[in-house]
Amino acid sequence: MTKMPISLTLNEHATTLEVEPYWTLQRLLRDEIDLTGTKEGCRTGNCGVCTVIVDGAAVKSCLMLAPQIDGTNVVTIEGLARDNGLDPLQRAFVEYGAIQCGYCSPGFIMAAKAFLDENRHPTRDDIASALEGNLCRCTGYVKIFEAVEAAAQAGGA
Ligand code: FES
Ligand code: FES
Image (tube, rainbow, N blue to C red; front, side):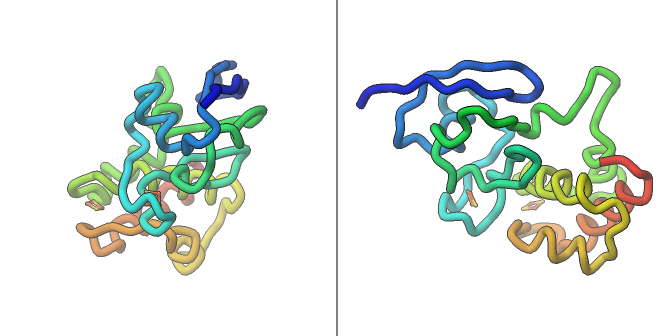
């Protein structure tokens, strides 16, 4: 099949890529440009490990086709840390023990980032609702919710 050119902002860098029309965004990120912080799980939209942010919204990259990101602003987990260190949400996940095996963590952090960017003072129930599309087999969720709550209270996401 013929590849098509797309242009986007990826982790704050203007980027042009050639993509096959049938590639998912997940495949593009992981297999074509080595942004493997975005994980692969169910590939059916159920686990959330592949979550990235597209134009400010949390998106499951296994459900989006690569051509759909033409002209968008995409942020992956690799785009969160800055020169001066981890994003506050990443720090909170470490400090609150919200990471065990860590496989779900990038997806949770990206979903939480998009949520906190729009909701500066969420309740615990708000946080749980916002993250209900993300699954974790290790933590029991409480520490994840505590970490997101702490990041919100610190005013950082
Ligand atoms: S791999 Fe995308 S939701 Fe599970
Ligand atoms: S920390 Fe292992 S799946 Fe969430």
